[in-house]
Amino acid sequence: MNKINNDKILKFTPLIKRFIAIVLIGTLIIVFSIIRIIGGREITYSEWMLTLFNFIFIAMIIGICFFIIKVYRSFKKNIYSKLKDLEQSDILYNVRNKFKFIVDAEEHINNNIEKRYALAHYDINKFSIINNSVGYKIGDEILMQIGMILNDNFVNEVFGKAEGDNFFVLFEYSEQDELVSRIKNITEKIEGLDIWNEVNIKPAIMAGICFIDNENVDVRSAIDKAIFAKGDLKSEYKSSYAIYNDSIGNNLIEVKKLEDGMYGALERNEFEVYMQPKVDLKTGEISGAEALVRWNHPELGLLNPIRFIPIFEKNGFITKLDKFVFEQVCLYLRSWLNLGYHVVPVSVNVSRIHFLNANFVHDYNKIKENYNIPDNLIEIEITESVVFSNEKEDEIFTVMRKFRNDGFDISMDDFGSGYSCLGLLKDMPIDTLKLDKIFLEHIEDYSSQIIVNNIVNMAKNLNLNVISEGVETDMQVDFLRDIGCDMAQGFIFEKPIPISEFNALICNGRKKYKLPASECVYRKGDTPLT
Image (tube, rainbow, N blue to C red; front, side, top):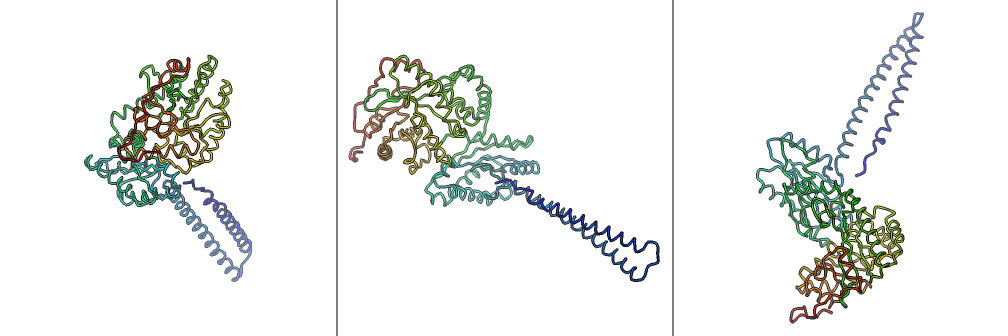
């Protein structure tokens, strides 16, 4: 909600002041006139009557002025009170905002200190992607209906809303089982909204829970802990909840340690670039690689990106790390070209945060030119969520086109990991579609095979290259090859390896991996996929 402009209310103040000034001046004129009439001589009856009338008139004017001042002050106080209420409420969703929630929650606890409390943080998994798929009008309607559920179910308890789809509830409880049951009940009511069926979406409601210490009430800290507990949930497409505990608290300590050391780590070259080969499914030959990063932490050892990338995404350091990895890739490519290696294109990941920087493409292209890297040797990997969680697709597409114009290829990473909008796929300026590993989890099922086969066919009809990540079995390789997938990436070929090991794969010709013999992977009696 936009902040209300108080000047619109205060504009009446100078008018009232001018009115009172004019009245006072008029009063003085009348007083001086009376003095002139009275002074120095005997006055007539009519002059006495006129004087009496003037005194009565002056008294009335003064009374009216005091009345106006009193009414105005009361009016201003009432308006300021309403403005304060409006600024502490989310009008659209009819709930408190985060600031008002914190104030009311702490007051509620302090006034009922004998009771037990827990704070729950609700949000809808991938709601920004839902917004993009069904439109913001429907998204707002969903949030309004959630606000109505909270209003109906928490008459004597405190609830509120922060940014986006984040809601907070201060629960009173006696037993933990009772609390969990109530939290699940609210989740089920949100899941049961008719609007989900209307837009054909099955929502996943995620909840983080923090128990509150009544002796040291700190609702802000409880909110942070509830959010952190929710963040500890696996990214699955079903409703779930998590309770903050010491283990999650220890994670908070680790987060602090990683954040404290990240800038120094960049200066000390503790971040190392690894490569994972991409394999041509027709020839078995290395046809590309993805640049990944590891942190060789002096205390915690070699850290996988899952330990630190989400943290850097939140605090913004990811832009510096991405740029570091990109420049290292340019350095390696230039070295391989100078040594006469059989160079393959390398893909690098970029975070959504980069898209807030207007000079993003220019900065990357300048680094590429500084190392004199030929066009189409670097592929920019943009995750599906970057596009589908952004309300300004046109701006994202413009950035992608700029990259292509500067000689970069574009790949959409993790396709299918969220609420993919196939309607936008035809308009995207991309070269490669990278299927998320989720598609391979049940590839032995014929229905899964149908879905993957159709996605690959669609991509090929759009003249896109197709690569599948997370490939781990011969059956998966065989299936992907048979349906026309171009490349595969996964542990069946190579795990991510240090640069020194990758050099050995391309220095004397590109390594060729043995592909499994082609076998029918479909169930007997099923119609073969074509």
